[in-house]
Length: 355
Image 1 (tube, one colour):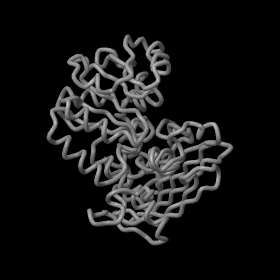
Image 2 (cartoon, rainbow, N blue to C red):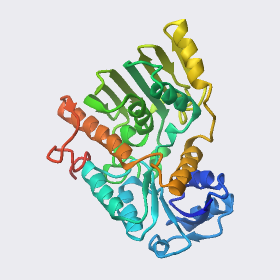
Image 3 (cartoon, rainbow, N blue to C red):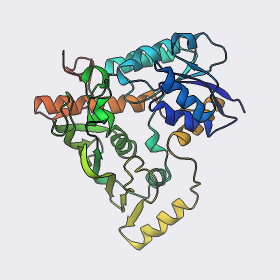
């Protein structure tokens, strides 16, 4: 089993990545922490026993002792850093949102196809045992078709959070609560329920004096015909994330843990006793694995070793960005937006407003 050597770039959310990689010894070794703030990078390095801190991203690219560049920097920097790392022959892991437009993700996908390395986006919420049990039930045909789903993201982000200079700005954060907070729960919905066909959304800035939205509500029609509603606020005294999916044969409801709604306990309420027996039989073979980042990275190592599909793909990231594009365009236009979004669409090259 090969051990892949990682440079974590960005010591903010990158701290959690370093923690997860360190939890998988023999599979990964964090070789370096890279951050413009050497003191912040050093703090993360000391916490996880990483021997090197650098402040120059370019210095990582030619190093033979680094196999993976893990991009955990502010969203507007993802595209150039990922491009450079791919061009240098590295594997690349990149935080959400992957890039700022469908045009950018299509460009990055072309670069990845031509590169020696792979590119894996981050959607760690998929890799927790509650949501994995639901995916198992869907794949086994136990759930039947989905009729209706609701997704709630009710978090609290006030002044101290937005004191970080790049947050709350279109140019650097690329969006607000839809882009930076609810994106994971919305990805979970699409992972389970399939592609979105149509979107109608409203957004508002009601909580914080920022450029971007901190409140949103949307109605979705899935390609399957199922309906879904999304609600997001950054002013909830009690923080929760919740998914509730009403299938023909059962209703699935997530845990309320705001930053890990995929974890157990999930409840699966059967429409009839015989469905309950099928649920029990289908879940009997479920084996719990590490969750969140550690769960994604463990599967990532397996894919690198076998050449199998990555646990999160560029197609997954593209679907997330397409939903974001549609949500923002609907909110601004006051009209429903049909998907897919083609290259000639007004938001194909970006959902952020013009300066």
